[in-house]
Structure formats: structure tokens, C-alpha cells
Length: 70
Image 1 (cartoon, rainbow, N blue to C red):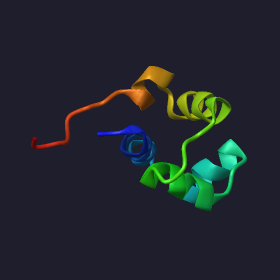
Image 2: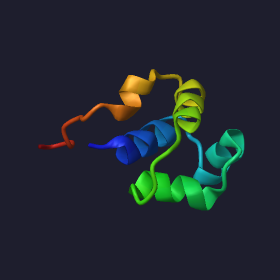
Image 3: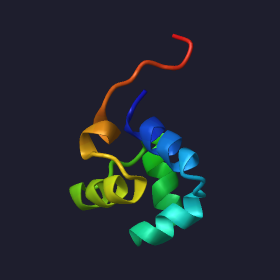
Image 4: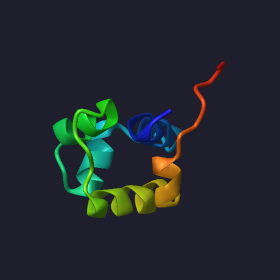
């Protein structure tokens, strides 16, 4: 599992849509979608804001976690 998958998992756990999270981050939904699909990398500032909003540490966002069922 990668940063995009970690963000998506935590976002969905919080019950947030991409549009809601993007709005709170002051970025476009398109940019958040690209971050989750890993076609764009978030800036350090966006990573920090993501961690704050999702209630985790930046290290959690960056952690490699095994895929479920793997």
C-alpha cells in the first residue's frame, strides 16, 4: 500500500469525499484524485495538512503497508 492508497483508506474511514477533503486542503478535487492515483506527489505542506485533517502522523501516510489479503 502506498501514499495514495493510505490517503484514500484514511479519507474513506473518516467518511470524507474527495471533494470535501480537497476543499479542506485548499486544493482541487482533481489534484487530490491525482495524489490518490499517484500521478502527482503532494507537497510537504499538503502532507502535513492531510495528516492533521485525517488525524494521523505524516509517517502513517508514507508507510508501506501490506495489501489486505496479501
